[in-house]
Every structure is written in C-alpha cells, then in structure tokens.
Length: 298
Image 1 (tube, rainbow, N blue to C red):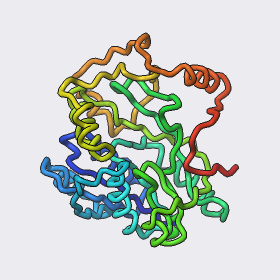
Image 2: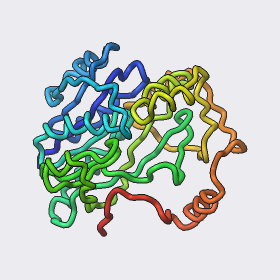
Image 3: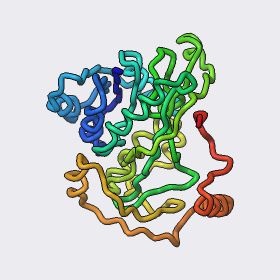
C-alpha cells in the first residue's frame, strides 16, 4: 500500500514554523513526500533540500499575496501538492504540525484497516493545540478536536476552504465551480497531531499574525487590528497544563525557547454559553453542536 505525503511552506524560518521537524516526522510513513515551497527568501527551500531524502519532491510556487478570500490561498497551495501525489493513500501535515515517533506505525495499522472497507474514505486525528509555550494546550469549543489528515487518494479529494480539512467532489470542474462537495466518511484514530501554531516568541507571533491576517481580511480591517505590540497569549478562552511528552524531533526547538509565558486564567475571554458547554464536555466527553467537516463511521 503506497502512501503519499504532501505539505506546503513559505518563509518557514521567518515566521518560526517547525517545518523541518514536520517534514521529518512524515518521512517514516510515506513512499513520497511532495513539498510545495512558496517564493521564500530565508533559506526555507535550502533547508528542505538539506534533509537529503530522495522521497522528497520540491515543487516551487508563487503566492498571490492579493488572494484575500477566506484563506483560499492555503487551499490552493495544498492542492498543488495533492494533485501530484501518486499513492493509494494521501496524508497531509501543515508545517506547524508534527507527528511523534510512534505515529507512523500506528497510522499504518489504521490505514490497513480502512483500506479493507469501502465505507471508509479517510482518517481523523486528534489535535493537541499548544498555546503560549510548550506546556499549555488549548482544548475548547473554539479549537478543532479532530480533523482529517489522511484519506484514500481516489483523485476526487480536494482541500476544503482554507485547507484545514478535505472533501470529496464529483469532478475537478465541480470543485472549481465552488461546490460544497461531500464530507468524507472517516475512522476516528487516537494518533495525535502536535500543533505548534501558537508556540513561538510573542513578537514573532504578532509578526506572523499581522502577515497572515491579509489572507482573510481587507486593508481596512488590517489597519484597525494590526499593531507592533507583542502578541498577548492571555487573550484566550481557556488553557490547561500539558504534562505529556513531545515528539523527539521537537526537542531542540523546545530547548531553544527564549520567552516566558505566565498563564492567567482570570483573564479568560470565554463566552458564558461556552463556559456551560465546555463544562458539559469535560464531564461527559461529548461536544454538543460542534461543527464537523466529516462523518465518523464506527
């Protein structure tokens, strides 16, 4: 069973993405790995070349910085890689997502199980959303608990919205026309994605935030919301302490942390409705009324 990985990155060093760790974490699982590298000027492409693995195929791309419709540019970059994969299965990681060293073997077992079932199209993986540093995670109704990261490559799966998830389409023309597509039928796995989007120095986090906001908002919104002050990680609904292990590939990055985050739960901006619903979820394990871009099959 051939497995193809795909990802995309632009100026990974400039914005503090653990992209090398992310790519390396996928390699033990895949037979090929398509890396779409946007027009970078910080050594990102060279760092990927230096990994020196023949399974990596670099595809160069140019980002349209004027594409400002709901993060559509990210789906575009994801689909450049997706259209090139040749394996029976495809697996996607964004470059702030890392698998631990046990994940490849465990995911392969899930893929083999799903491969025998015509009613299964993909796998969803649970997310650990790190926030502020490497010792706190955000697990609330404003984060996704699971998302599709692996699927059968039938040629009709494409990135949905901003590439956070995937859907099946009747044809390429159907996708291009803006059709909603079909939610994939998936198995739920217990193989975590370590998500480090908000684990960087507060000044670097603000720099990243200011730049990437342009892909969702117009100039007027950006002028109102952008600032030069550091990102305030305490402007958040709820965090919890993380006592588990991180992927071995992240150890050097974690050791280089050069900022301190002191979590202040008294500053929570959680809405009253979410306070009740989050309490219900903690007690029952059920997240009522949650949006899901997939259909779980038992």
